[in-house]
Length: 53
Image (tube, rainbow, N blue to C red; front, side, top):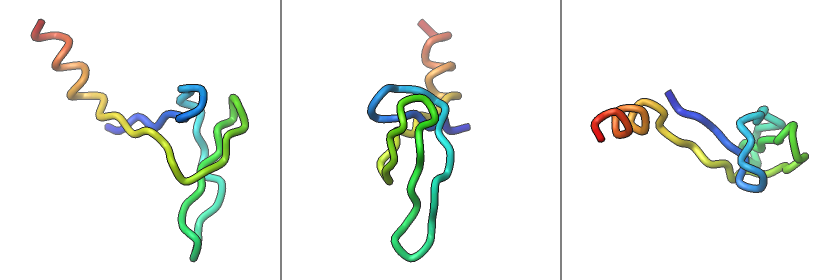
């Protein structure tokens, strides 16, 4: 599972804003950031890595 977070505030409250010929844009509902760049993190790998230590 991938967790998408805002590059500006780190919130996971990201929604698809628009898409089409220009590409996909996301909007952060927390800070209002709009852009194509978001941070995706693999949740299972982080969870498993934390349990092994």
